Image 1 (cartoon, one colour):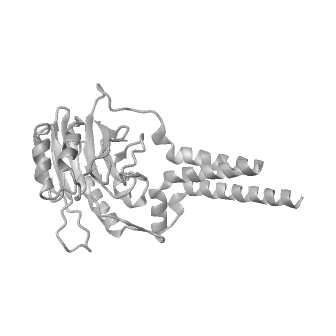
Image 2 (cartoon, rainbow, N blue to C red; image 1 turned 60 degrees about the vertical axis):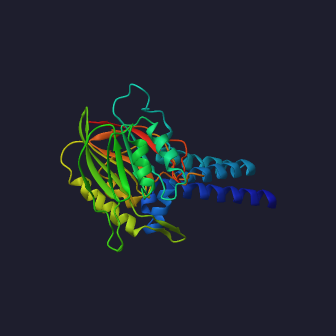
Image 3 (cartoon, rainbow, N blue to C red; image 1 turned 90 degrees about the horizontal axis):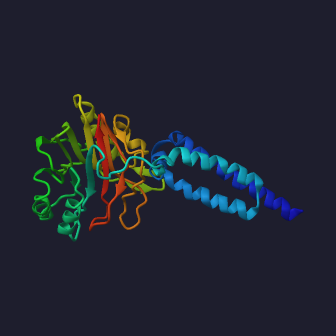
Length: 312
C-alpha cells in the first residue's frame, strides 16, 4: 500500500510538471525580463520536455499524469506546431521572389565554396552578413556571373538578379558601441512585379546566462530597424538578416509587430553543427513569407535559409 501511495504521488508530480509546461507554452509573455526572452528563444524545445513527461507517465502507469499531459501537448501544437503543417513551397511555378539569407561567418575557411553554393540556389535575392576582407572580394567575383547587381555596406551585402537602386546604409548602431559598426543596408530591387525595398541587417549578438539573455544592444538595434521599416512608404518591404533572435523572442517585437514572418518551416539555422534556433530571418511587409527552409551547410557556423516572398 505504501508503494502504491508513492507511485500515486509521483503521478501527481508529473501532472504538475505537465500543467506548468503548458502554462509556459501558452503564457510565456507573462514571464518577466530576460528570462522570458530566453524562454521564448527556445520555446519549441519544450516539446522534448513533454515527451520525457509522457515517458515517465507511462512508466508510472499514472492515469492522472497521462490525462494532464493533454494540456502541454495541445499547448505545444498551438504555440509551435504551425511551422510543421504543409504549406506553400518554393518549387518551380510558384509566384514571388525567392530569397536567401546567410551569415557567411568572418572565419569561413571556404568563401569561394560558400559563394558557389549560394549562387547555385537560383534565388532572386541573396543577403550576406559578416563580409570581411579579403573574403569580400571572393564573394563579389564568384557570385557576379549569377548576380549582376549588388550593394555592400560595412559587413553586410545584397546580391540581386534584378537592378538595385538607392542603396544606402541604415544606422543600427547601439549607443554603447564606440568602434566602427556598419551592419545595416537598404536598397530598392527593381523586380518585374514592381519595386521592393530590401533591408539587410545584422543585429548584435546576445549572451545566454543563468539570469536570461543579455540582449540590450540587440533590442536597441531591433528598435532602430523597426523605426526604419515603419518610415517606409507604401509598397512591399523585405527584411533579410541575422537578427540574433527567434520570431517568438519579445526583443524582436519592433519588427515582428510590423512585418509578416514565415508561418511554415522551423528552419533552425544556428549553430550549423547542431541547430537549435532560427536566428536568421526573412520578414516582409505588404508581402507574405512562404515556407522557410535551411540549405546545406557551408563553411559558416550558420546554415543558409531560403524562402519565397509574395508581394501584395
